[in-house]
Length: 179
Image (cartoon, rainbow, N blue to C red; front, side, top):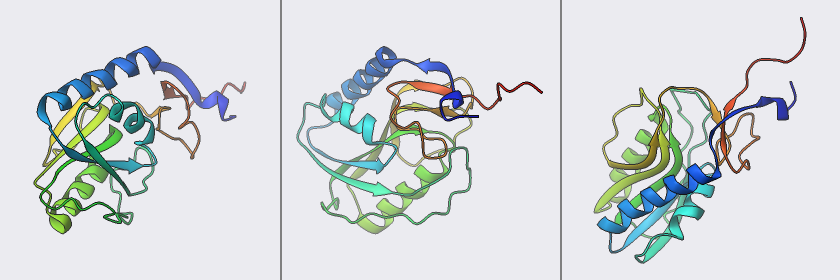
């Protein structure tokens, strides 16, 4: 199967993504007067770029990384956060593309809370999936998916490809080859 054949049916088109971003921005604008936005890279880059341009309050920005494989539910990768901007006693908004199982986000939240003592920490994502773990943070999201399909695009990869798709699609796992 080629990289292009992996792209299945569209789940969220560019218009739906823009509406989801706007919804999350409105929620955050109603609550915050100042915050540090921390992007989970690389997946959260596109959502963060769209989101922060709609925020109406002063922000500082930083990033954190904790690589994982899509669909993996037991990520033990190293969390890399350089603390370029102090988050001690600051309101923090942790931004990623999605909460799938929630395991990686749960680890990042615990790490930031224990090591850097923010005043508060919230999570903002374009969407969440069912069956995710409970997180010790307020969550703001545009959509709640109805199933746990593997998705690609708008930051979500498969085999390190597809992050740059401007929409979100199902991963096509069936081959078009004749048997």
